[in-house]
Image 1 (tube, protein in one colour):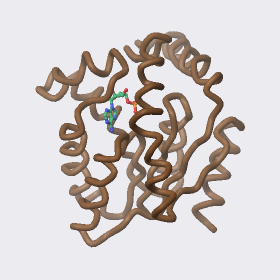
Image 2: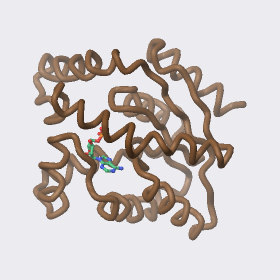
Image 3: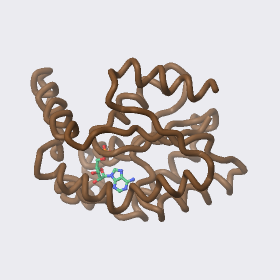
Length: 193
Ligand code: AMP
């Protein structure tokens, strides 16, 4: 099964993708996690992406498309995966379609998590404070300033994907404002339908 979780920053894509990957034996593919790992490791990609990510902007399409093309080609992805944070632009979506087509496969579903914009800042702030409480370092972009840029990027670049996947008949939308477990149940219901 090949899925995309779509939604603005703070919608719960990462949380749901991780739990769903465990429940269904799928691989979670988060370009944000991969890029953060590259920043931490100090690779060339990481050095290029770091300041863009910190400001909340989007890393160039070629970079993330390259990362995903390489990752999807690995054997553990053959059984299926959940993309979380990719694609984020129409160019990335088209590249993904081509990539899957070249492997003789297709996307099964795109699940949009719909959330109230007003809830996003408090969710992002909570994630940062939870991380600090657990003794960790919060993400460099989990603050009000970067969130503004991330939201703008979402509405400008990513939200057109809703129409793109609707036109393909693959879009399903669920309420991301209900508790985490309930969102998970809604996702399972969609997948089992
Ligand atoms: P995320 O963890 O998905 O919120 O991503 C964190 C940051 O990584 C984003 O704000 C972007 O700067 C960058 N990023 C992650 N995925 C992508 C993508 N598909 N296209 C462009 N930039 C991305």
